[in-house]
View 1 (cartoon, rainbow over the protein chains, first blue to last red):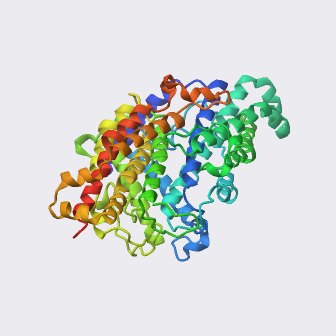
View 2: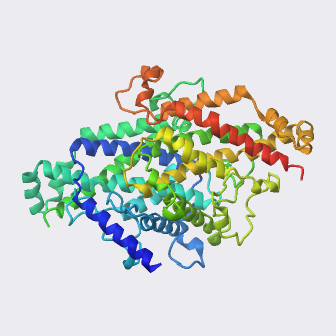
View 3: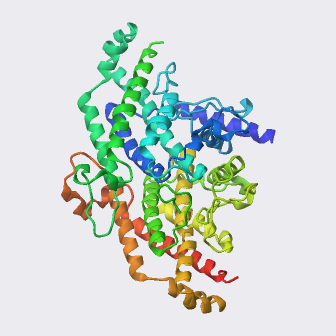
Amino acid sequence: MAARALQTLLLCNVALLLQLLSPCTGLSLDTVREFLTGEEDTIVFSLIERARYPLNRPAYDPAYLGFGPRHDASFAELFVRESEAVQSKVRFIHPRPAGRYQSLLEIPFFAYRVPFAMAPPFNFTSELYPAPAFVNVNDAIWSTYFNDLLPLLAKNGSDDGNYAVTVDTDLACLQVLSRRINYGRFVAETKFRGDQQTYTSLIQSKDRDALMKLLTSEAQEDVVKRRVQKKAVVFGQSITLDGPIETDARNSSQAKFKVDPSVVYKLYDQWVIPLTKQVEVEYLLHRLD
Amino acid sequence: MDAAAGQQQEPQLSLAAVRDALVREEDSVVFALIERARHPRNASAYTPAAGGGRSLVEFFVREAEALQSKASLLLPSAGRYQKPEDVPFFPQDLPSHLFPAKSYPKVLHPVASLVSVNDAIWKMYFNELLPLFTVDGDDGNYAETAALDFACLQVISRRIHIGKYVAEVKFRDAPQDYSPAIQAKDKDTLMNLLTFKAVEEKVKRRVEKKARTFGQNVTLEDSANKQENVAEDSGCKVDPKVLSKLYDQWVMPLTKDVEVEYLLRRLD
């Protein structure tokens, strides 16, 4: 067992060395926008899948588990912790580092403990500046998702006891929202590189408001919100062989869509876009460290 | 089967309700394939490890299934794999339930829990289906693609194993038609009784339409005419023809295999 672990470690190190030497993929406003646009589809799909199940509140209530090993954790928290541990474990059984959290594109909700002897040195893409590379708002995403979004999303009854299946769909939503919002680090890096002089002076004076203003384009945000709302219409409609294809929410009542398109608009307007910008500002404030 | 609005698990055992469940699964199947198609094939993730060891995907699926069923150790009804349509791919590894699943009324014959075509689904998915809708190549994101593969496998498996309900409904509607064939163990006659070509054609065309709709590139500038343009398929994230082939060659035949297997033991 120890010999195998050592062999894996050696192979990992060789592979890591090769990865560190490879050129990083180009970061530009175009690739950044492309990535964010792609995430919209995933977010809408995940919300639609979650909306199949009832609210299932006990799954999120720490008090409900009563005599479990951790008295202060809800079923959902335990489930997400364990799922993240499984997904990170995957990297140890393959010669090439393959775990979910290695590219820094994704940051787990719960720091997982990994036996030090088995953990290869953490490799991350060299696009991000090291100091703020781990900036994230996962705590805010977690509480916003369960407290604000879920009640708007899960209208299909109150409780079916089917918690593992339900929380699995919650995990998919949380992971994509986290990936999209914490991508603000890459957005910020791109913008910084595009105008180092302006950003540097604002960062040095720690001027959050001015940074936020510089990062905000209301026209662009409006396009994003309307597009993601349209995606909720297109992907959430009931498709029949002879029926029409909907593309406009104004044509029909919100009730016929699997996810209310106005809820998706609100999700982006009140949470996704503001939280992403929060990540951008935090990242920038440490960009010169 | 999904809960009706506001209800605990009330089994709606009518052909209409079962068909609704199947139709809803189509959307999930299309979404799952679209998500998986964002990554290349990553074949080394599902190739068995050197020396005959388990592939990365198999390792992941076993762990994920164990986790999802362990949930019933915390709360009796919370774990997965208690409903007849939720069938694990690696049942031997799962901790046995400590508590009976009393919240699920039994609408199917107990033999339902023995019916599984997951081995066939697993082989079909990796050997036949993946090459059809993922591009050749490797992006190293094995953990993520393993999770996406698992999502595809689960939804395809669930759709196919809803066949148990289909079989039960059809049997209850006409026991006199099915009983002789069951008693004679006549698979061919049973298969004929269960096959409705017209319905199957509709399913294929509808799932193709869903792939075309959900797989399109949605932009704000789209005009209404775009949907009629068949040539747009090339811009689709998943080739709609792959979906109709998936249903035609594998999903619907395997569903009927489940129905036949269930029926053969229905009178036990």
